[in-house]
Structures are given as structure tokens and as C-alpha cells.
Image (cartoon, rainbow, N blue to C red; front, side):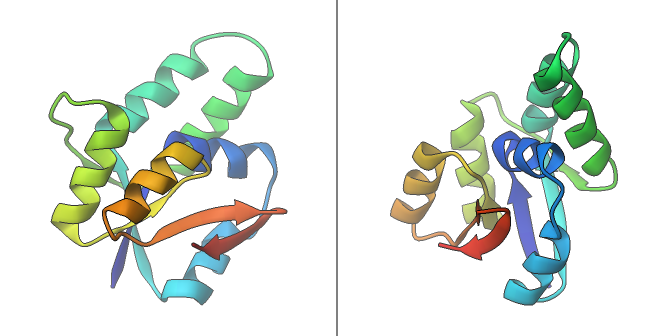
Length: 122
């Protein structure tokens, strides 16, 4: 079973615009285990603590990820933690962040992203 490590940008995107993201990922990689690094969860909690649309979207993203497998972070930048975890676990990175996607591709990792509300494999 594939592991997919989620970045806050991906979760915020699917929380803000409902899609069939989970089914789309299954279509691309088969059954998968969703993974949320604790530092990504903390990032979403900080965003959810405010007011306005972005905070509301972060709360929805937290709810979406409530059942994800949690993975400890070591203290590096969030993007570095995601790449390190993906390399260690042989996982796919799910992000809409162009910088993180480039770094993941440079590390020879598969990247799942969104285009026009649909999931695609970079």
C-alpha cells in the first residue's frame, strides 16, 4: 500500500474547493495510507486559530486529516521534514506548493498535486 504525505497547501486546497481527491488518489496509486507530519498539523492549527476564510478552511483541513497517520517531526523546516519523511518511508508527497514540489522531484520523489480541482501525479 502506498503512503502519501500531505502538506498543508494540499489539504487547504481540497478543503476550500471540495473535490473527489481521495478517490482520485486511489485511481492514481491504489489504496493508500494518508500521513500527516505533526509539524503540518501544527501549521494548520496555527492557521485555524484566527478569523476569516483562511482560518475556516484550515479548520476543515484539520477535520479532513483527523484520521491520518501522524508522523513525528524533528525540528527542521516543514518542507524539509516532509521530504525527509517521504524519502525514509518511500512515500509520495501531496502538495500544491511549487517550491516543495520542485524539491520533492529533485529528490526523485513522486508528487501528487491538483489541477483544475482534479488530482494528478507530477
